[in-house]
Image (cartoon, rainbow, N blue to C red; front, top):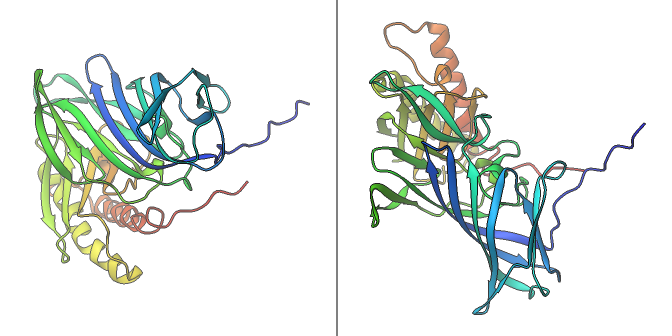
Length: 325
């Protein structure tokens, strides 16, 4: 009998503190390009940085510190077992803080995990696609190279380059939106810095959506995003969320730490829902209620799932388990 390979964690000689991500999905070719700057702390002498990465090609990598920059000497992958990439440098990296720069490309896959494409029928009756994410448990590594373990938290600065006629969402609120200078069809959307959080909670969605909006008793903006033409079906979930967020604030005695809470119905979604911080994704049947045709049981289900996912904004997102070997 073949011995089972021992379970291994990522090396902790280099750890992330902040990710600056720029991602540009192509909804026609089902690919995306990315640029990434990771603020890291080099804790032990090493000439290699190993992180999780799968179905992504890292085109180039550089390490910068104290005004000097060094280019990687080799980029290798362990695709089958570890799902990692190792970036080697010609000399040991200096201890302390530095920045790791990477350019990469990836696939908007059809696996319902990572950064994937979700098919729907537009209001014109034509087949269309949106780009969405599902990173739990270990699929952030399919969207960008990262330390994809729950305990290795960092802050995130996400920027999306997307078609002007699409809604673009991430965990945080938009701080800047502008046209792309050399392409009139695109816009750049920059989001605020996230709290310290696990990689599996990062999320972004690009597609066509309507929404209903309200505020809770504490002034948090809540939106429920629905398929085009179905905004009324998000009203019940909005009302549940407006009541639930203040309840949890009182129950946990901790205020909800983000300025907004988005709930969104995804056409193709493997789970019932996913508690991404500030951008909870749902199956349509777990979020939408038709005021004329949905049963009481369907409304109860939506209320239960919305309440469950919003509880995770504290229990799971703010406080996260540490995996044990």
